Image 1 (tube, rainbow, N blue to C red):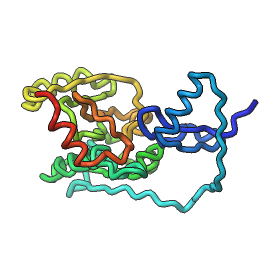
Image 2: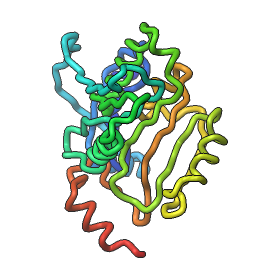
Image 3: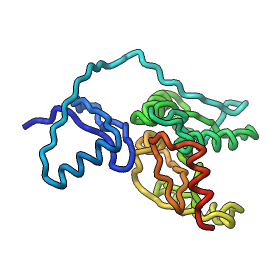
Amino acid sequence: ERILVYLLTRKDFVWAQPLNNSKVRIPYIIIDTKACQAIHQFMQEEKPVSVTASLKCKKIPGLKITNILASPSNGKYETIIAAHYDSMFNTVGAHDNASGIAALLGAAENKPQGIRFIAFDAEEWNKFGAYSYVKRLKSSSEFKKIKIMINIDSVGVGDLIYLLVSPEIENKIKKAIKKTSVAKRIKIEITAAKAFPQFDSWPFMKNGIPVIQIGTKGTPPFRYFHDPKDNLKTMSQIYSKAPN
């Protein structure tokens, strides 16, 4: 037996990020959530599963990824704050990640010094925009000056802010958060991890730059990632019915 193709998704939503391994030459096909659920059900019932696919594919060397950068007026920065502006092909992506871009613009509004703001492209496609940026950054003298990267992804709904942080900065972040007015009004959950490769912060983390990954979650959970219902109407309906 040999593997001919990978079928990629998750049982709860469409997942389009390919295998994070450039040496694997086996093609992958994205399938929607209902198809994934049906395949899982057939496998649990030990029914035979047959998948037939007909497609033409090719690599597109000239495909452009457009990252949007805004630097301080003096050109000097030690902090990067970012969010991805692309969305999955089947949704407008109000939560994932128009909300992150809104937060990014809010943070940049007062034009703080020492910070470069970046809107990344192609996060949903294996973080190609972030990987491309880090590759260029490493070839410049600016790379060694970066002290931290903060990434904002899916903050439109929820009653809890979560931070995933590099282990080496966990204690500093916890102390800093306790002193903020936000921490007195909103619950903030801080978790240290050596890797969280699903976000645009990962290419930075892989190269030794400490990162903070910011997101939100709550009750009820927002289930419409990578789904046509990830829009303002759905978000408003779900959270207007949430318990206080």
